[in-house]
Structures are given as C-alpha cells and as structure tokens.
Image 1 (cartoon, rainbow, N blue to C red):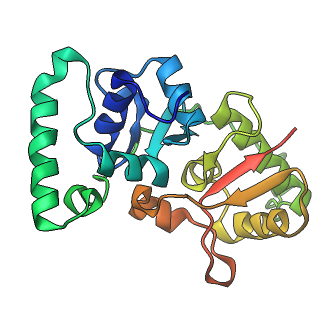
Image 2: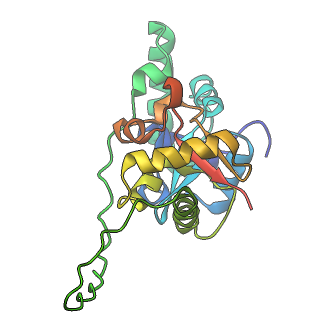
Length: 228
C-alpha cells in the first residue's frame, strides 16, 4: 500500500482508536475487509494477533502517529458526521497542545470470552487392592509440546503468527504458572523455533495482558511466535 491509508482503511483505524487502540475484529462495525486489514498490516499501521478463535487488531506506534497528524483525512462519504467530529477534535488538540493519545486514553476493558464447555472424561475405577498413583510433574519436553499444541490451536494450525501469552495461558490453565514460566524461560534462552516479544504499543496492554506477561529480570514479554 502507499504511505497513506485509503478512506476505508482510515475508518478501520478510527474504529480501533475509538476503542482505545485495540479490539477484536468481530467487535468492529463496519467489519474490516480482509484486503484493507492486510494493507494496514503491510503498512505497519496495525498488527494482528490470534485470540482464541478471534483476531485482535491493535494500532501500532506508526498508526497512532499517523492518526494524530491526519484527523482531517477523507473518510467514506457516508461517515461525514465522523469527519466533522474529527475536525473539531483536531482544532481542540491544536489549541490545547494535547495529543490524540491523551484524549483517547487506555483501551476499555473487554469481558473475557465465555469458556467452552468440555466433557469431563470418566476416570477408570481402581482395581481392588490397588491405589491410584498421583501423576508427577510433567517433563520440560512435555510442557514444550503442550505449548506448541496450544499455540497451533490458537492460530488455527498456522505458524509464525503472534499469539498473546494471556490466550496461551488460558489454553494451559491446567498447568501452574511456575511450570509454564520455566518452559518460557527455556524458549527465551535456547529454543531456535520459538520467540518471545513485546507489544510495540504499550497503550494496547490492559490489566489481563500485564498479569499474563512473562517477566524474567523485570523485562515483560507478551507475545509468542513459533516457527515451522
């Protein structure tokens, strides 16, 4: 795409910024076309991450910077009322010296998705004279395999996609946090197939994302990618 979003693509940015800069695609109206979404990603105006079965769109630093400087950009004709309001906001920000980020503030907290019901497998009855042994702690290799399986479940089988650690931890809720963190530390240290990274835009973080972060030595990571 060119260095400037089209009116339809600018509308996607304003829909996201109206929600604090980050939202599930299914929550946006009108829903972004795939071509417009991919063009915004290619232009580094937004980034996407699989969240359960949904796709989360977040405005990048480049997107915030563009929006703050282009409040008077054209929008689709049917959104004239939004354009009028953006022009008034632009005049107010120019007069007050505030930034667009100051005006918008942090993202609104979204309700967590409803957990999917799962059938509880029946436990085999113990034979007379024998007691059931408690399962031991899973090995490092087993936890690493669980992480990859959860990652692929969240991406629909695709690799090299960004997955939030909050979503990954939800998929691994039967494992305690220490067990998952030990595996994440091993990935960060010496796993060539996987990579941990941070959000480029801290404004897209909410309390849930901060709580789910993996923070060795005080440096938080929020995203995991696993290559093929």
